[in-house]
Image (cartoon, rainbow, N blue to C red; front, side, top):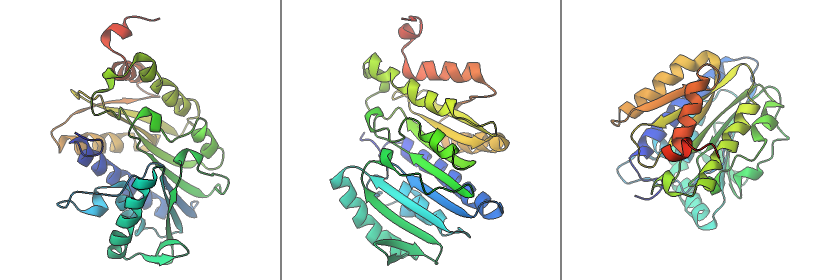
Length: 279
């Protein structure tokens, strides 16, 4: 099964719909937030199966769809590093965005005078953050195909947190359809610093939820950075989304369930033998 076309994909997109829908609703209702910024660091090609609805089944479609609900200025930026994939993305945006009411403007797309959507051929890890203001609500999606494609650069969470308190992000981990444990240990251990980077910069009002799919031979998981006040709601959303597809998830919060959180990390990235070998 190719990356992005497995049974995990519809559950992931259902979860992303929940996340983005909750984000735009909250931003609309908080007076201190004056602008929204959504960055998709790994946009992909925007291709979905013929039997699926585009706006619900790929990250560009999900962001464009929920962006129409924004009541404040919103900038959506889609990054794709591979030229051939980017060409397919442009083709799909040209086909699908007009169906959602978007119009071409200034080399990109706009909706309703508030939403600006643009695509970039480039590495999401190089996204510029100097334009972020304290009143901006920032949402970031990082959905790599492999650990080598991880697009949230070292120090990125701290960079955003230094500019605004309104920051959320979701990352996919595992990313290997043949099974994460088939990779060499050194490669798999590379996941730990990526999580540590987010853990180290976490402000008191947010927490990290590690959601690992149970009995998954490819050992996929998701890392969500969420406000602490949303813990219960987020847990329900994640669990319900995967149950719809006949799957359960192991959920662990960094702040309140540290031992379980660390145990889930070890089980995700190391074999049983390796966990017993402290090296």
